[in-house]
Amino acid sequence: MGGGSFNYRSIPALVSSARLNESVVDTAVARLLRAKFTMGLFERPYSIAPQDEWSTIINNDYAQNLAREIDRDSIVLLKNDAGILPIAKGKKVAVIGPMADFMNYGDYVVKGAAASGVTPLQGVRNAIGNASVTFAQGCERWSADESGIPAAVAAAEAADVAVVIVGTWSRDQYELWAGLNATTGEHVDLSSLDLVGAMRPLAQAIVNTTTPTIIVFSSGKPLTESWISNTTASLLQQFYPSEQGGNALADLLFGSYNPSGKLSVSFPHDVGTLPIYYDYLNSARQSSPGFIGANDQFYFGHQYVLNTPEPWFPFGHGLSYTTFAYSNVTLDTYSNVSTSETITATVSITNNGTVAGAEVVQLYIRDALASVDVPNMSLRGFEKILLEVGETQEVRFPIVVSELGLWDVKMEYVVEPGEFVVLVGASSGDLRGNASFWVV
Image (cartoon, rainbow, N blue to C red; front, top):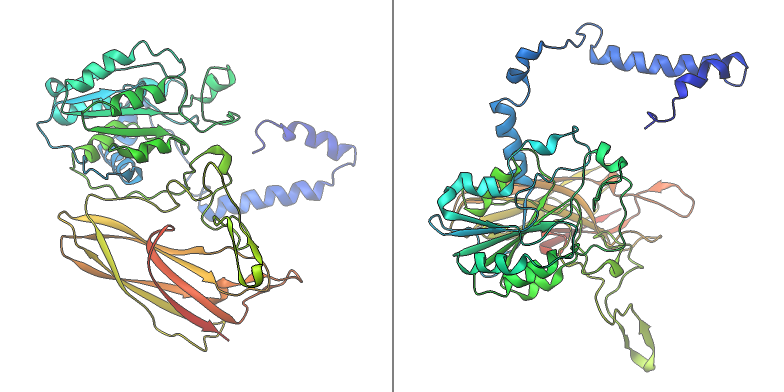
């Protein structure tokens, strides 16, 4: 990203002073021109449409529908133990929280973009009508002032269901550089992944009512509020959405769309247990505190006295309003596999729930015995499938053996002979079946 270095201003002087060879400049320019020719930019140069035509090109119906679809697919259902979700139509819903009537974009947005778009509150109102919705902000995004919490509790107690929307926020780049408060974004660092200010007390107060509660994390990063796991509250993660984010969230809340998003990052219990990622090295992050073996030999582990190195929600996690059964994990060959082969792993997935749904089937591979330290497993394939109630589909994953290598002690890339374990499941922490093959 060289936009701030203004190299083009110094290149002529560097060339004229013989500090930079002109052939280097020619090579760089030639590469750019070659790429542009390959893309056809000289045959089909870009043209700027007249302003009165923009509405037919940008933000048209197709673009808005696509944005809503992408937003729906990216929302992750983290927890629904009590089955509060989806909310039945006809219920009175209290929408609560400082992120509820707020367009929570990331920082790389057009200046002033927050003035447009559908907020979560607007999305809920669009779905069930104004008469069925009450709103209480409860607190500000940044302030620790809890004076608005009693009014939010009253709104929740008067409703059939409460939806609490809390999280982190960013601003467009102009506002960030102006020093306005944000809890995510470029050059924005924090020492904690907890909710800021009064947001945690607000969420806890609503959960402690007798009203069924759904918490929505609206954020650009994981949050460490694992106390929610000890409650009956349901939990959704909505990473920074598009202008259709509010409508997309409402689609999931009221069951017109079945969630299918999966986490692309693990959620820790606490910032103190970082780093946390699914493909940790085999030499790292045992959660066992150790044990006494034969001849009183002590085997060391890693003991977290107040917490755990295990994730709160693991990489690949994401629930649905239906359930999926995995079975029949097989390989088309199990032994004497050469490094030039591609083998196929097959698994059967059945929707054994009550509604149609999509599942992202994930395949991981573990090198059972390597000459150097390698990840305990690596994601090697995934496929999203849509299943009707009772339907079974067979999913097939090609495994290119030459891609299963490592860099050995000589820093040479090799695929070592030995056992490789294929693991298939709904997440890195929910593996449902396995099979092994041997490379020779």
